[in-house]
Every structure is written in C-alpha cells, then in structure tokens.
Length: 156
Image 1 (cartoon, rainbow, N blue to C red):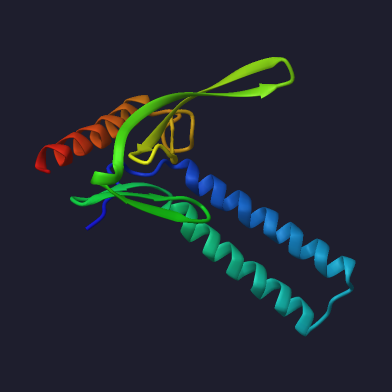
Image 2: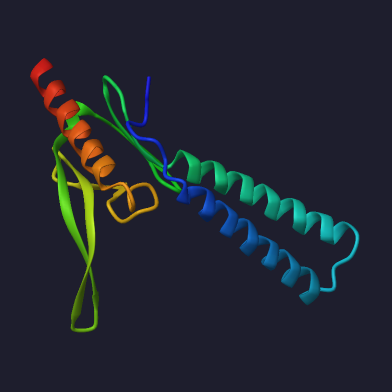
C-alpha cells in the first residue's frame, strides 16, 4: 500500500487551471488557423480535453509515495518504484542553475541515491507548489523519507 506523506499544495489547482486555459487557447488558434468546422472542431476539442484530463490526473498524482517495501516517485511523465534495499541515501540537495557566468540558487530538493550510484530526482522541492508556503511540511516529508529508509535498513 502506497501513501503520500503530505497533502498536495493548493497551487496544483492553479497549474491545472492554467493548463486548461493554455489548451483552450491552443484549440482556438488551431481551429482558426486551419478553418476547421463541424467534425474538425469536435476532434480538436475532444483531443485537447482528453490531453487535459490525463495531464490533470498526473499533476494531482505527482509526488513521493512511501510503503513498507519501498519508495515510489510519481512524475509528470513517468513513475519509478524502488525497494528500500536499492536506496543508499535520502539526502537534501541545494539546487542551482547557471545563467552565463552567474549561478542562481533555487532552493533545496530531495534526492535519492541508489546503491548502484545513480541519483533519482524527486518532485520534492522546497520552493515548489506543494511546499513554497509550508517549509515545515517539506522538512517533515524529508525526515519521514529518511526515517522510513533507516527503519527499512534495520530490518534486513
């Protein structure tokens, strides 16, 4: 059984609404650009509505889920499941981006280091839509992941 150890932030609904608006604009532009009528309009509207429903579902599901056997990371495009045995470390990473000669700090993220040496990014970012105004929740989730990992290590 998987569960997300935090409630999603209200900003997810803002993102879903923004995507609906963007896809509606795309539908309008496509219909005007190609002079679509009748069935063409219905096809574009249904295709973009289906894309929005799938995307909205994935946005609502994004995050880190824990279970007795491991950790599951749901991203926008794909999901990854790792057993606790495969996880070497759960750590914080200070993220930054380079813009020319400047380095711009962008906050803390949670990274999962696997035993094979590879790193797995999570959707957990202290400045993200779930934690921006709730830094204590970000810290609690990080500690929950670390504690579950440590507890699982003690069982094998």
